[in-house]
Amino acid sequence: MKADWFRQLLQGLRPDYADGQQRFSGATSRIEGLSSSGLSATGGAPLAFTLEIIPSSAGGGQLRYRSGTAQLDLISWRGGGRAEFAYLDAAGTEHAQWPPLGFAPMFPLSPTVPTVSPMPAQPPPQLPSVVMLKWPTDAGGRALLVAVVRGDLETRRRPFQLMAVP
Image: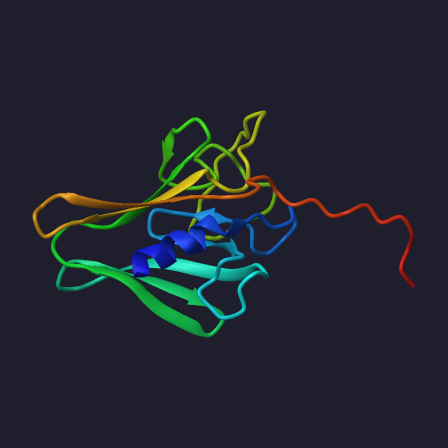
């Protein structure tokens, strides 16, 4: 059930405005963004959330969801190795962060996601096409949880204002 919550949350990802404070930011251990499928009773309106991989001192770890004051541990695992997020673009290329390394965002995102200059001519959309969570299993393998982002991946645009509001 909690794996479905992970998928539901990420399938509901929504882009923010170019100057928005909740633009999607993805690293190997943390995701921040907006989702219209949050894990609260107020579904529908995009809510800011964080997913973070919390390693355990005994090995293993857990995936923690936060939105406002709500907090929930979604998935736990045991054993050695570390869990990580990965991101796929529309061509199916895997990236360790989003936006991908080499693409400078229009505005600062999160201190957890470094950017590199110069910026290529065609930046990627604000959201990845797919978000994956990989973690080690007790048998020595790797588990994989995949969420395909539904909806628009591009940055939201503000509607043109035809008249000034007093």
